[in-house]
Length: 480
Image (cartoon, rainbow, N blue to C red; front, side):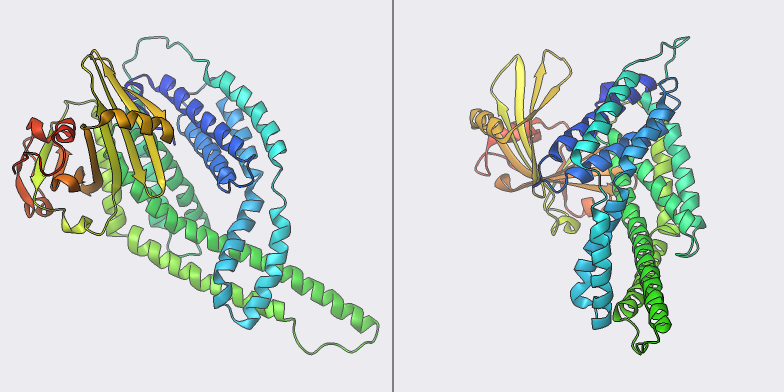
């Protein structure tokens, strides 16, 4: 997932849009290489997602990419991504059937077995990796040529990528909200499909901003929730279509058998094929699942909760329109305990160490999210813009050994409250809980902070990360 550093957010919209699309093209190329490994089950999925993001952002920034043949190239990206759709739909259906198999009755199992045999044939329609590679390489060459060619503006402009994104975001949010609100039942398939597509587009527009604009993160989380609701509904539509086609095919085949028996004057069977009864039972199960999914969507998105989300998007758009405004102070607070709402959450595990040095300040970092760990090295020199370098685990461990006596291990949580993103850091070895938020003097502390607050520590150097790393564990003199 491409994330834009601050200096690209401040650049012109055309340059940054092109750089963003090139970054996504590189992600697709890396995912394609992984598809060569039969053990990598996520390669195809990641390749599809990268192409989807690329096409979506080429469409969103089509004005900025005008003159690059973007519309024609978008169509080619769509064609390549769509070549795996049938197999992907079959995979979704197979996964659901396998997960439900033990809960199915005898008739339903007969229908499921018949459907599985048909779906396994469909799964084979995915083009080979070699075919995908040939199509992608030709497309990649044309995209690189188009995206690395930039127009010089006729006159000087102060427009930034962030300012252009604000208007694009506002437009997509409006379309999405209208599509969701207009859906009155699960039968409104066209509206719900449009909403699903717009939710993806909105999320893809927000994601590159999250490194520098933390307010984007809870909005991205909200879009993931909406995508889950709409994705479940889409899955039921796909499953219903698959089951219906299998039922129609089976019924037609049975009708032909009955016709042939009748023409040969043979005795007709009394029992209806069990697979057909099973397919009918599966259809009923899908209808019930679809209705439950729509009820979930209504509860979370069609009403006050949904309206509240889009109000937050509107506030974020307002922030983008004036960005970069006067920098807000990062206010920091010392808490007695981790807020109650976070006690059962895992958070993000962080190991951070500083390598001794004066002219060059260097630190290494390992960030664990679930099973994934991201290793990196950060360098600052003579007031230059900080540089970040991705590391392998062995490279990280070698550098980590150099940070002895300057190491910090903590767990980080993020909470959105009234449009602000709070960062809560728990440091078990020093028995410390710190909270920070970007805000001015007008900040009103939420109750969940006030209930644990010891004092404000904004500007207190001994609570800065590097100072805490040097202080060491709880035995160090860190009086509260």
